[in-house]
Image (cartoon, rainbow, N blue to C red; front, side, top):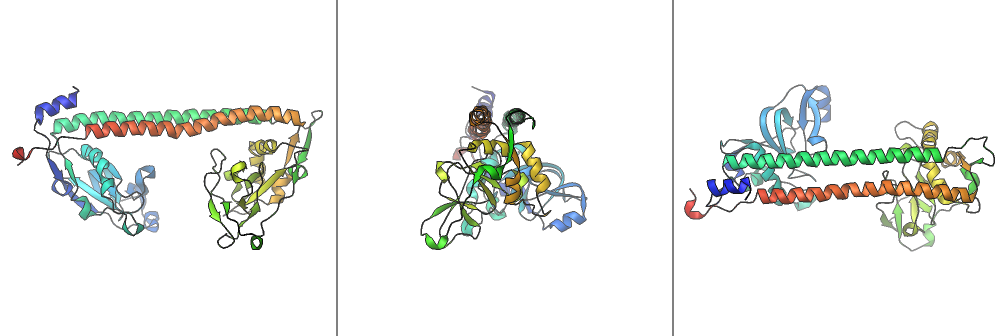
Length: 399
């Protein structure tokens, strides 16, 4: 029997009474604050909104509406029902609700933990806009064990939260170190002395074949469309497409792909969205926002082009040759004018094999990071549910 179980057996053997949020909290809503308002009143005190990134911070102003220990919750939108513990001077926008504990028998941090386990169940998704408004929040019932039990649970869950954050930081640091190691070896393997014997430098245009655009009037087929958001910047894979045909294809859906084409996004190009086309997307359609590099395999291996455009040297070249400030881009002609070293095919294959192993290692770690974190979070959620589940108080013992 652990300490929480011993406390429950001693302090509430008959069960735990449940109370509504309206019984134990004062409930308020935030106020409308525009980005212009934040700009004109910039200061040091946080303003929280409906988002969950950055702890929900929308901006900072020189005044504050609240000072003390509170909970906020997201009332509208995709994050509706998200619960945050706040302590200090702050303000909230109109898409946030506010809870101030008014019952001496309730610890605010405990309320944050237990309310986070149930609030999402009360979110309404009617009309496509998730909501959990004040009239719904006030009716949510939660068990309220004695303070000694609340405090012990807080200690345990605080430790879980800290360990989860430490694990996330550790795994992300390992991933970043592996990426830097891969970048170093890629640059080293793909750096050749321009005067080195038998190594030619040629423009990409000299080793690529022509590509073609689709003629929508001549086809009734449906295709997967790769737009500028379809390619992952992290691991250079295609993560999602939409289906298009002659009736609904956007005007930019033009470029016909073949297996082993290399595509490089020429709009906002230093974001480095590029990929090698595999079997899944052969004969599909890409946006005109991509430069399609189709290797002449009598001269070059497709992956040799792929690895060379992954280099920092190519990224520097793109940065110097892109045009436009608000929405920078680089022309296909400029991309294809970039010169790469051309060892013989056997040497290309040898270096590609090494680079593929490094890239696979990094990508496996990239895939493993969210998997590992998700497993730990599920473990944390399981223990949290166990800690925050209580036997209901028997009617004969209730007030």
